[in-house]
Amino acid sequence: MNNNNLATKPHYPILDGLRGVAAIIVVAFHLCEPLATSHLTQLVNHGYLAVDFFFLLSGFVIGYAYDDRWNKLTIGGFFRRRIERLQPLVILGMTLGAIGFYFTDSTLWPLIHTIPVWKLLLVMLIGYTVLPIPLSMDIRGWQEMHPLNSVGWSLFFEYIANILYAVWVRKLSKLALSLLVAIAAIALFHFALTNENGDVTGGWTLNFEQVRVGLTRTIYPFFAGLLLSRVAKPSNLRNAFLWCSILIIVLLFMPRIGGADHLWLNGLYEAVCIVFIFPAIVYMGASGKVHDAVENKVCKFLGDISYPIYMVHYPLVYFYVAWVSNHKGITIAEAWPYALLTFSGAIILAYFSLKLYDEPARAWLRKKLK
Image 1 (cartoon, one colour):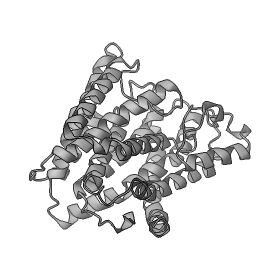
Image 2 (spheres, one colour):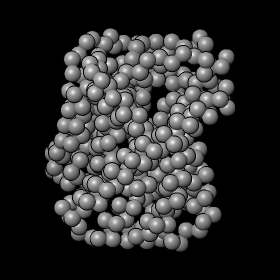
Image 3 (cartoon, rainbow, N blue to C red):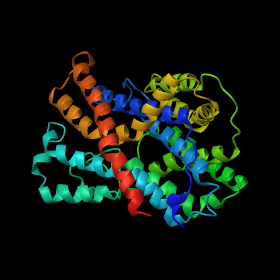
Image 4 (cartoon, helix red, strand yellow):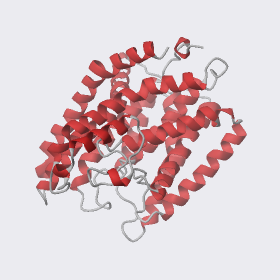
């Protein structure tokens, strides 16, 4: 069966818009992060939770889009659709990271100029597959799975969740899925409350501990989103996009809780956000309706650029981080013009990446993968 003959279901426009709001906050977080003196003093304190929100949204949308199609859809067909959707921007992000790599030689990454071109190209080609590189091939010095585009780690775990869904979890009853989600929630709370940093960050290094962190951060939200798509009966909530956007902004910009003396309190806050509040926001977003043309255009624009901006912003952030590291002690007041330039550049790059590359590439893949 040609999976591309399956009719496309209507999108939830508000959920598309919320994905864009979260993606923009990720960019803001990455621009503020190098200016913080420690993980306790970040301006966008919980910006990394946007990734956990993405996983939950992804699980919800995957369940909505595919749960009732498996009588016509093969596992191969499912993965062709996922590759068509995800892979073009994975390749672009890695390529941009490779193009800019040598230009980010700085006090933070002083050995970049010593990396041979063949090794850079090999890391780029591996990055195209989303497979993580071993620590022995770390060419930047941050111990990342994908040193040419830092955010690639979350795509690696996104694919793992998709594989688990297609070969196993989709077959689970609501009760069995609920049990899996409950166990994953307990694991997430345990991690959040015991992590030495007092937060849920991590998952981007290829070692046992960090892979465990990545799986913990992925399994609960993705399959909670799947469960939500099966059991939720959306109501009719007015101004859902506005209220959900405000909630996301407040949650991710919330000042650090507990300080250095009570790190577990911050972990508790983040676990509560992921396990309880994020599903509520997705339910509210699914329950809302777009009531006018302006809101519809805003949601569509934010939804359209959400994945591109997530996948292409970090190659620009590398330049910004290198600049900050070369100007030690620089303040937010001094850095904001460069941060704003990077932020604006990321949005513009995302839009042109979408229109000039991603949409044509997906159309080409759609024909080739029939």
